[in-house]
Amino acid sequence: MEGVIGKVNRKLFEEVIYPNLGFKDPSVKVGPRFGVDFGVISLGDKDIIVEVDPVYIVPEYGWERSSWFAVHILASDLAVSGVPPRYLFIDLNLPMKMSDDEFRAMWINIHKEAERLGISIVSGHTGRYEGVDYPMIGGATLIGITNRDEYVTPAMAEPGDAILMTKGPAIETAGILSCLFPQVLERDYGEEFATRSQEIFYLQSVVEDALILASIGLRKGVKAMHDATEYGLWGALNDVAEASNVGIRVYKDRLFIREDVAKVLESFSRFTGLSIDPYSSISEGTLIAAIDKGRVDKALKALEGKGIEAAVIGEVFEGSGVYLVEGRSERPIVQPERDDFWPVFFKTLQIIQEGSKGS
Image (cartoon, rainbow, N blue to C red; front, side):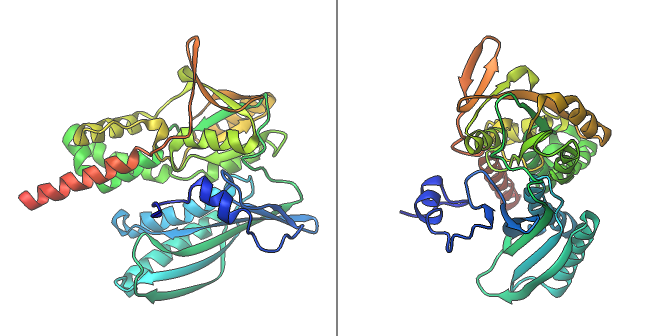
């Protein structure tokens, strides 16, 4: 059977990867598992949080934006542990077509954002190779260090916790579409909105969100955190419910979406003729957190103080699965089978390319 694009499915993970993880070292406290984006190693009175991801560079975003995003993809997956990212190890396998000037622009901006986040680049490897192309141009390991047991994972949500969401859904979907295809938005809303909406791009990070919530207390205040990447909000909620072996109930009237994000989705839906479910669309930048109910007000106030919109959208209960409550009815929300971003992205690209050929 042919492989599919993206992360491997659960079947392949559980049949091939999970049973074959090398030597079983007792210092490994959190190893590979579905829905958890980092590992934990215990050494003495310290825990080391380890996160590994591709180096993801899209030149079409512009080198500054693309470098910023590459750093925040890595940093976000570590920050949801509640621990600040600290040391970066980076392997760059560059395409032959990347010039020295382009590399310089990328690297300087990676350095600037790492410096701003307090991340030191410790070691790595850099070279150009045949057969390499954007966006995956290498891999990186990011680590953070904390005192013993002072971290959280998506597997720590408990019945009675409140479920909090930051920024709303479809942040990454809107951020990428608005930057790559501003002409679509300009046609519907004018040049000013098309330009302003590109700032959504810089919401595609949960580093600040997660570290703010960590300040209310790890495990006693915030119990679990997860960023809504592939399959959006519904995917993230299902990840947390499954990892923690709990049920999650979400209330339709508590969900919110940013006005600019909603307008971007409406515009691209009209342009392509495709529907976009904001809750199952890729949304790096949207943080889902399980919070002790006694510290919800403190959490919301801390986020508000930094200008981050957030709301309690549901609660954790003893059970399994994710459920959406609308009035007096309740229906299950299963893991989405597709992410609506990709069909819209490729259809938009096709329409624009065909239009440029015909002009």
